[in-house]
Image (tube, rainbow over all chains, first blue to last red; front, top):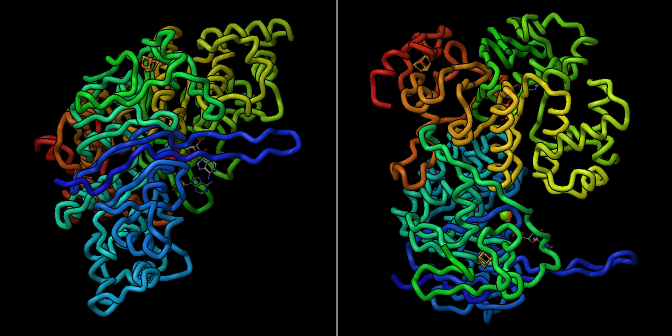
Length: 317
Length: 320
Ligand SMILES: Nc1ncnc2c1ncn2[C@@H]1O[C@H](COP(=O)(O)OP(=O)(O)OP(=O)(O)O)[C@@H](O)[C@H]1O
Ligand SMILES: Nc1ncnc2c1ncn2[C@@H]1O[C@H](COP(=O)(O)OP(=O)(O)OP(=O)(O)O)[C@@H](O)[C@H]1O
Ligand code: SF4
Ligand code: SF4
Ligand SMILES: [Mg+2]
Ligand SMILES: [Mg+2]
């Protein structure tokens, strides 16, 4: 399959304004991230809170402007597009957010929420709007009768389905899913994941799936990108691949199996996640890494792609 | 050590909790697991005698600790027990920490109150406890304010406070839910060690079945304010007998172990104002019969485990 998405050396620096008592500080929320996403594949972006997953998603959709790097979507260089061209392209790349409550306006009925993308894009659907919305609601497993309900009348899982219906309205090819189930109960999470699997098969969608839950990512995705403090530290080509980066191994060993016969021995982990501001030189994981050497504290390891299983580490496992 | 029988809780006219029973012994970890709103925190608050604070009351059942029924304990006596022989850890460490006070004095206060120690002895106890929890440089930490520490470190301090008076029972209500997985694993390891080394009885409340599988000896599964199944952890995972427990296990992604499709459960968890009559799970249960909508099921016991289901035996016969 050809690549639907190519991300090269993408970076985002945030600067906090200085004040009379503080000096201005800056941090790399996303730091030189590169990967390819072939059509119809599902890539999982995994990492702990604050490692830059959501920022990466926003950069890819160009909802925020990068500090450097390039994004190619279906052969188009996104950063070269004008705002008008970008708006048109965005119909084909949509995002579903973690919080189903923030994504839809509480004042409007669901029919309006689902029809909104058509209005924003100035697209007239082929069928009458009511019919189009009913079809979209059905596609995500909602009773079309709900179209006249208000958001407060439906559950969190139903709201997340509405979020997905909206994202699907303009028939995108790429869905960026930013922790779409993180605020839901597991019984509802399982419904939503099942729905996403069905939609992918039916519509031939490509997903970029963000989560901090490695078990869920292993279950749902074809390949996995592991992030730590803004950097992609490892790209697992498939979900069975063993960890080569010490951080990925720590992450795997910290993820429990839902089976009392498979208890883990939890190795003590020294140190804490360093502050993302003013990171010291070298590998950001060095203070917590059992393999760290002198080299690790002076030189930042680059992501080496020689073997098809990319890892950014001086002493991979 | 701690034994809860048929506990019921009401707020005015609503009854969000009923028929909850479990027991936990020294050196044992009991897991209470359930989805949001199933009554896990209310159970913890009942045991801690904290319901009156939020306007709730115990309507039935007993909470037996070391031979006495805590539901009849006057508040004065309860105050000695809380933070003394029974410790509590909550999800948000800042509910237990004073943001304006340095860590050292906060932990010292527990030793002064419950162990009657003077300032110097209390500080020695604080540093000892922080050391046992493998908190680096206790003396330095004592001089910090909560906002100068990470979430995981704050949670460790809360655990230290709960352990200062050397409790017999520790109730941990989602102690790791707000934390990153690598930090969660460290806290879980810490709690496990404490149960083994100090013969502590631990009640671990969580919505995460994987955490239960990793740490617990026994499990209570809650749904809509009721305990629906309880038993040894292996039984709950290998032969769940209640349809809800079975369905819940079918919802957990197992990564590669079994790449089989997650089943999910139709519908949503009911809220306290619309708890169904009869069996609380009947609107979502694939096995429900007419009787389930009217008659609350009693516990059907098999070996060490029990399931509140009219058709629990049938459920067991079918492959989970
Ligand atoms: N608009 C912004 N201004 C300044 N800093 C920001 C901004 N957005 C994000 N950050 C910082 O960038 C870093 C990465 O944030 P991001 O939200 O991408 O992380 P994340 O991996 O999505 O985390 P989570 O799992 O908590 O959602 C964090 O340190 C965050 O505080
Ligand atoms: N002060 C209160 N007044 C009335 N109802 C309450 C009160 N506190 C809790 N409840 C209700 O009791 C039920 C159980 O709540 P509880 O907080 O014990 O759930 P939980 O299992 O801890 O959920 P979560 O996983 O979300 O923490 C809920 O339906 C809740 O709305
Ligand atoms: S580069 Fe060094 S410190 Fe970083 S993960 Fe690899 S071995 Fe550890
Ligand atoms: S009592 Fe009936 S509705 Fe309840 S779990 Fe058993 S079979 Fe299902
Ligand atoms: Mg995020
Ligand atoms: Mg709770």
